[in-house]
Length: 430
Image (cartoon, rainbow, N blue to C red; front, top):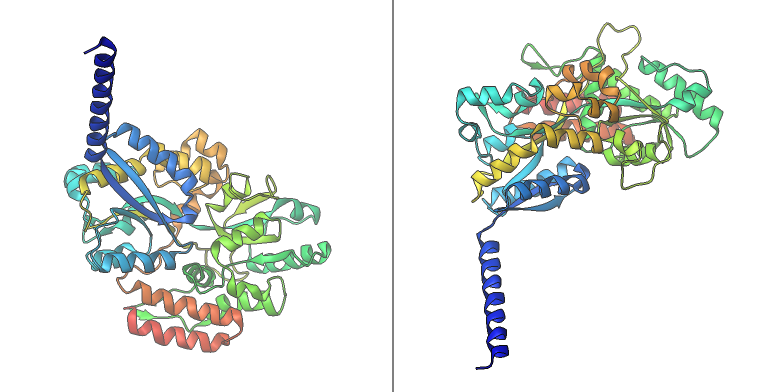
């Protein structure tokens, strides 16, 4: 055989061997499928997943994106997990979901992966208490915090300065200032006050936050206590904003969380209620163009004038759950621990405005440079109140949000909505 042919065969053999080795390596990889909503910024998540893969070359992470709201994501996960489908290994769930998912047997308990009781306590000591409490059921940890959250009052600094207005501290001042600015600007596109009135989870907080600020509590002495003066004050705030002061359009009945963000980012709102993630978008770290970079301020939610109750925020955030049906539990937990690390948390906060779940990051210079309002609002974050922790939460949410939407849209009066809310909650919330 000629030397040239021998060399060709040798080269072919080496190439074939490399292909076999490559195929074997690919087959030996564990593929983890992770589900989360599109609003959690897949453009920021993918680079973090890539770094995890580089550190763990035997693991591949596949993203699966879901709906833009907590309800749509929950519907999909409920369908998949009810079928005991192992196609999803991990998922992000709303802070309100762990008790529901745990009761259905969909979550893998995590204590054993953390090394037992003592090591679990040591690991969790660096986290904010609120997110950890949401993930702790019957003294076990069932999820790891991905981000915490709460709603703030975003406002146009430039427009308040133009009309010599100070940052409002009461809801009455918000309404009055919104009237002043919208009248002065005479711009039909400019909303005075934007909020979420669509029948989504955000509408639960739309009700609870002013309800708490008016001195209300869902449960008092073990009894539902919604059809009250505090309930009327909360709902009438939004009804009045639309029908009386006219600082909010009727379209609030169709407005979802990310709709609110886009409206304000386009320069079309004086005041807006939204979660922490909106901040990065407003500053230009966003797939969408912004007209308000440098023009947005952030404040805690207002009180009501003359009512001796502190303003209160809903605790929000997202949790990493490990599917009890996953066939790759060890590898998946390794990913969840990585995503809950200080480095991943810091990156999501700096680039995406997500509130970290690790206490130390609120003193991190890079995090604070990107989010200067953290210093002022850290006490607000710590005081955020949980929505009811119950396996019946989906029904609780449905009762509140559908009645809020009915009031905002004009389909129900405030009194009728409160009667219906009271009756409905008495059947599921105890």
